[in-house]
Length: 223
Image (tube, rainbow, N blue to C red; front, side):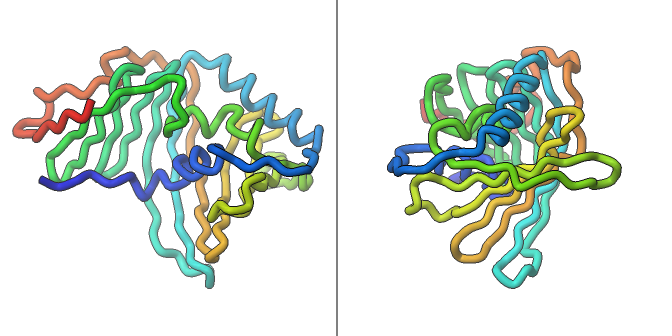
């Protein structure tokens, strides 16, 4: 039996969740202008009934050499989500999580905890920053005709491997368009939202793993 590992392409999401847990608080203040922008992103995202977001994740080493690039699509509706990659998929219907490995034709099933601190794509677009980061507005820049606001976040817990996150927000739409994570060892994760489509009609069955659509799949129930 092959054990399905956490997705390399979702390092960004997992890292944000990980550094927002069990932080050791210290003295420090955040920029109210940055908080206003981030609060606006959260408020705007919560107005959407659903979201379909295409993304590209690029990983670079300390010298700037690209170590890998992957494309994917995330679908979100309430607490439900689905993430599609070339070789892996995650389904979540807000009750169960199905993690499917295409190469192994294997799916692992775990329970979903709405109040837990685990990964969901929704956390990237909402208020993950409130308790465990200091943040400041670095300024604005014009990129492809869009005015992007650059916000720098630093984790309060200095023991974490990631020491800085840069979030770029489209000033007009109040949507996050890219994020950069910096590790102490020099590794950088560059995450770009390539498409963002809100309020598409998505049936709830879309977020459920249907074994009949995956002939011969091995099911591993870890609930």
